[in-house]
Amino acid sequence: MIKSGKYFEYQGCIHIHTSESDGTKSIDEVTEIASQVGLDFILISDHMTLDSRKAGKQRYYKDTLVLIGYEHNDVEDINHYLLFGTEDVLGAKLTPQEYVAEGARQGALGIIAHPDEIRPRQGRYPSYPWLAWDAVGFDAVEIWNQMSEWMENLSWINWGRMLFSPRKSLESPTARILSKWDSLNSEKNGKKIAGLGAIDVHAYPYRFGPFRITIFPYKVQFKSLRTHLLLPEEMSKDVAIAQKQIFDAVRDCRVFVSNCRWGDASRFEFGAHRGAEEVICGGSLDSFENTIMYTRTPDVAQIKLIGNGQKLAETFGNFLEYKPNSNGLYRIEVYKNGKGWIFSNHIRIGL
Ligand SMILES: [Zn+2]
Ligand SMILES: [Zn+2]
Image (cartoon, rainbow, N blue to C red; front, side):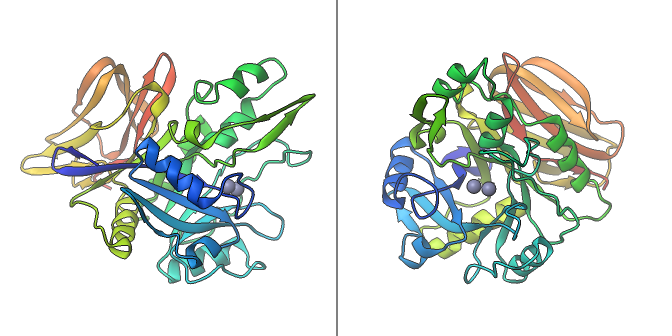
């Protein structure tokens, strides 16, 4: 935990598989690694099982909060959806619309996983896109999924570099998913949808031609895509209360995502004020008039302010101030050497 302005900032990793499904390490080994790396929380989501949670593994392990949900898929094994806080695994025959709605009814946190994979569906490593965009009740989408990006960019030319430097090979969220995420949030009076980073770590033994190698060891992955949450109070030591604090932060979009490979993004700030009113990412102000937006980065970098999907301002430095001249949906993208470093959630003005 880090104190960031008035807020308490917690950083962790989301979308983790263990040997309960197709990961390669046990939940105890995975939590030990997360603790060594210093993560404040991890969200574990094995495929269609909550056995680890039933075995009492949802708990604090030293200073790391371990929350256990699961990854649901439909009968065609697409439309993958992370659910945290359901009473049990939902029915395997439900449609995506049904499992999204049922998760919401139970008060669970629902995250659309790797929504825009565009690899072919066939072959040894098929893609698992989200197609059920008419489902109602999800809370968040993975705007950056390490596994999706890696698989999409892998080729016979770059495979060596990609295998040995998985963090370095991460570029940034795709324009497709960012634009989809913006449009999900711009619906008039619509629900706020958080954008999260996901590592989707399995630590697979992977065969590439004659080579066999474990890609993405957990320790390396835990130092790549992180999701940062801003809480108004310190996270409780009571697991049920801490879980609710995490759900609330995600639903309120007090979130930014970083690739830790390019530096610790702690204390990144994106805020806006209008007279005495002040908000941070996730917040709303009534009108653009007399509104000033600002962002601060913990290191010099290329900062872009995006409004309604368009780049409106850009600077190289560690501070950017901007006076919007229309209502809309604003967010920040930060790059180092052309590679994505930090992506904020939205501030809404007059929406
Ligand atoms: Zn999946
Ligand atoms: Zn997964």
